[in-house]
Image 1 (tube, helix red, strand yellow):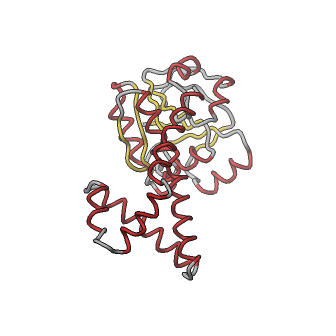
Image 2 (image 1 turned 30 degrees about the horizontal axis):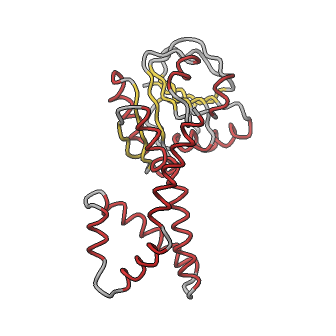
Image 3 (image 1 turned 90 degrees about the vertical axis):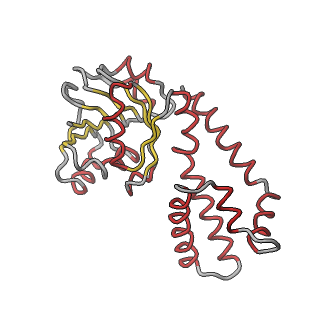
Length: 247
């Protein structure tokens, strides 16, 4: 599979770390960024402009507002768009391909730990899931509407989880734990919880940790008093509404 990655900014660049098993060509017009990529990925072909799409699977990773000025020739085997809030109908107007896929990875692609939402043409489903699994876990959704909803927990939630991590660390530092130790605990905590959640419902995990009159239920009560669950539910909702607005 020949990959043409158009755009190698934050997300496109993060995806590159997991695409090294493929024959990858990258289109990146910004010269300083080209130099960075050349040092990081010496086996990747770097171009200043978009070549003919013939024979390529295109990963479209430019800024959504740059789609309008994109000029392409030829027909791709498939196009995988990671443009936030951009429906496939808009992509079809600018890029000719045999199949169209929309995907939403997250920044954890840098560590090959992204959770990536995927939808689009069933004819390219297996290939898309295989390719996007190279940067983490890929989850197939039935529609673009579902992908827009999943953007909150898949694409935006890493920022919210980072906010939680920082707040937990601040809490520990506030009462005397050194910053480096608190960050080490939080990082290990996040990794461990991810593994547990693969097998158990969140409520079961909470109940197993919580004992009558104990420390955990006291902290849980304080979080509920602060409306933490309501805040996260609303965060997902406003993220979805903003995604629809971008479209």
